[in-house]
Image (cartoon, rainbow, N blue to C red):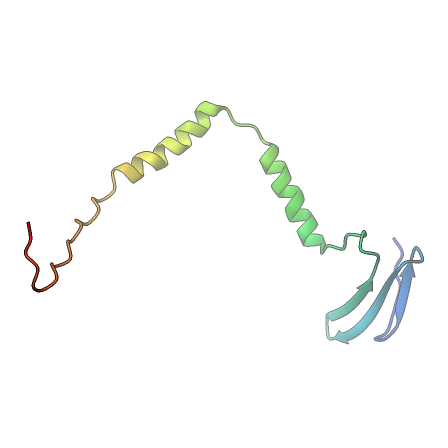
Length: 99
């Protein structure tokens, strides 16, 4: 790992086509401007970590019976819920007779 010190307004170049410029320094916050080709992905590290964790959890396999048991509890709970309110018929328009 290379560690550099830069002041606001200074920059560094990576690989000849990526430029990182220090825009401002405010206490412990540093604002960076990154210029890179469109095919270069630039992500915050916390997004990379979250994506990897999401991918790992999606790859975990569960037996279909286990999934049905989980869903069964949810579906049974919905079926046992309160009855929907009765449908109220709007009054007939004045001057018309009901059949």
